[in-house]
Amino acid sequence: MLKKKVLVTRKLPDEAMRLLYETCEVELNPYDRAMTEDEIIEGLNDKQGLLCLLTDTINAQIMDAAKNLKVISNYAVGFDNIDVKAATERRILVTNTPGVLTETTADLTWALLMAAARRIVEADGFMRRGEYKGWGPMLFLGGDVFGKTLGLIGMGRIGSAVARRAAGFNMRVLYYDMNRLSEDEEKAFGVEYAEFDEVLKESDFVSLHVPLLSSTWHLIGERELSLMKLTSYLINTSRGPVVDEKALVEALRSCRIAGAGLDVYENEPEMAPGLHELENVVLLPHIASASVDTRTKMGTMAAHNLIAGLVGELPKNCVNPEVFSKAEHS
Ligand code: DGY
Image 1 (spheres, rainbow, N blue to C red):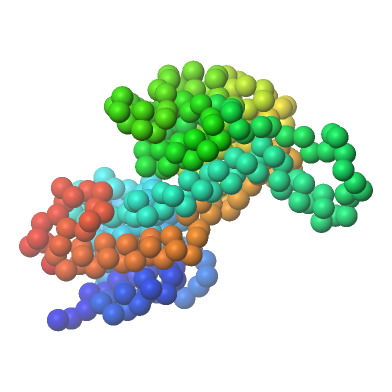
Image 2: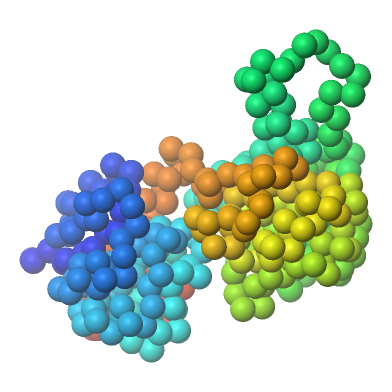
């Protein structure tokens, strides 16, 4: 049987690439950078499959140009970079990589939370610059974590994995989600439901775990930041545009909140003017899922999703399964 042709927009961990090369005719982006829209269109010319990243915007124009495209496999759990409605209209399957990155992302959320509260990055810089002249009673005083209140906006897989970790710090955990958990689930996770504004007002740490949708765009802006405690911290490992970054810079600059930890940005890879000059924010380059094991699992999952779709099976992690038809997709 002829191998299906696929475009892979960035080199993935070896195990995933091996799987793809074994089963497909692969065209791989030769550069260590995201492909441009024109390059993707050109690359997809004769391809049935696309394996892309969250940095690739896959819009209707690309889909229209890719006449043979049957499956788009995203190497991420979030798929806001793909116009799923357009894909569905064109009967193209779209898949993502849920589950495998949950714990790694929750770990990094905690790393950011701890780093922001205890001023780890500032203190590290101080040491490296040779400024430490001896123990001081007022040196790098930060915020406590133990016994404080953690507020989770979004209580899906990642939100609940973050909640589980809070038990070790004896924290009260509040959450807001469009879908309230059952009483049993709330008990099991040790969390209390509260209205959105209440979570903001009551929490010492507010951590965001929602997908990027039109309803979550700028979910946290000037109004929401003004509800938060002066001593509180905002942590974002979800998607940058969930936060109005300009309003956040203002809130951090004026010490309206104590600090923030960010892994994602409104216009990645750019940052809002002034953000990088502030000391009360920890800035990471979107690495929440970046462990060797997890990135390998994401790669093999994305490869399996793509291959399944191309051989006429419904991929396990299809976000628009209504499109699937065995006849059409084999
Ligand atoms: C995802 O999978 O959506 C993450 O942001 C990748 O790190």
